[in-house]
Image (cartoon, rainbow, N blue to C red; front, side, top):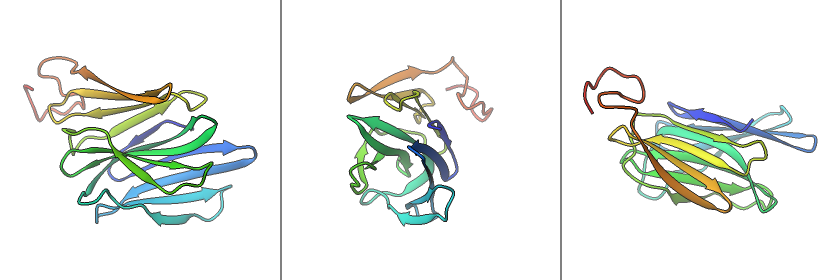
Length: 169
């Protein structure tokens, strides 16, 4: 369970460590803040407010997944802001560190979803986003670093989300 498609303010992910099942839900409230719901072994969940970066308001476009790096388990959430910035929220579950965030780019559409996927051992992470010009961007974590790739558009006049609102891009 590492893949996630986030839209309209909610996304989720899960992983298993030994015999313990971890489930995480992420929600962007109408106040523009990020919240985490943590559930262990199908128990009662606990909500935690994570909040947006200083001076930012989240739009509710988000995606989440578990990750492994240097034998450490992480939870990673990507979210867009009302001004089109993309932020990565990270938490080292193994070390028990608090949430931190890193800016990962600007010019993202504020009305389009994000999507993510990971490989089977949670070491290669991919996040797909749509820019305000409707081109597709891929952020990929591999071998300890993030790289960004502009994947372009599928063709002239084609909206990558299937909307007929725009005849020509």
